[in-house]
Image (cartoon, rainbow, N blue to C red; front, side, top):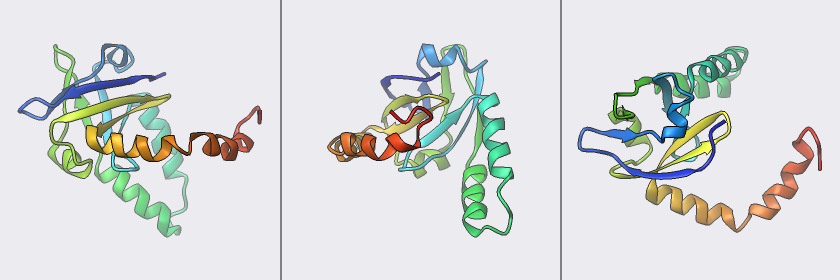
Length: 146
């Protein structure tokens, strides 16, 4: 499970240091792709296969499913960690997520996300005020329905 918030900077070659606790779960490589809300999604290889299965099950006749799958898979890149725990963030993904230098890496259970720091701050500011009302709406979707 990926949890927490970590702040880093890209180096001049477009590499980011992946947090040590995250690296333990990655076996030296992971898949990075376009996420939602202008961030990047990063998956372990096992979790990537699960996502692939879910998306492959969507009917090809569903236009939204085709569009999402095209963007999700065409943007994907396999990333390898170097000996210092760094991974290259491909240029097309940096551009998509508006990443220049300062980034925030957040754990989101089965994946982690990479955000441009300023985009993360804007997002956090926007959703933090609605945290309680979002929780009220989502409680009916959970398995325990607390």
